[in-house]
Length: 62
Image (cartoon, rainbow, N blue to C red; front, top):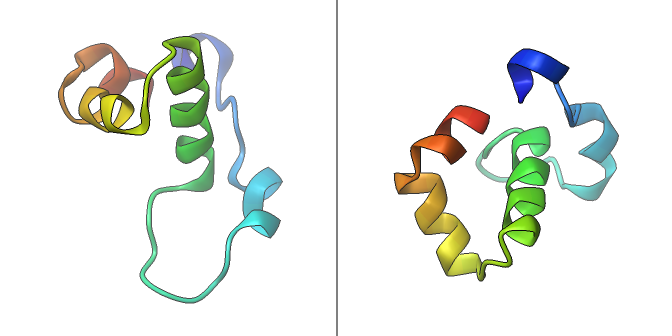
């Protein structure tokens, strides 16, 4: 998807939704893409986390 469309969700668009304190995590754009993929796949949070860890199509998309 990124190869064809470029960056779908820019981090700047989501910066206001997250705090600046604590340990840095994934980029905000990546988290947004996980949420979209989770919704499209009708997955629970646990299923989406498993897909991130094991599914090569998700890994490539992210």
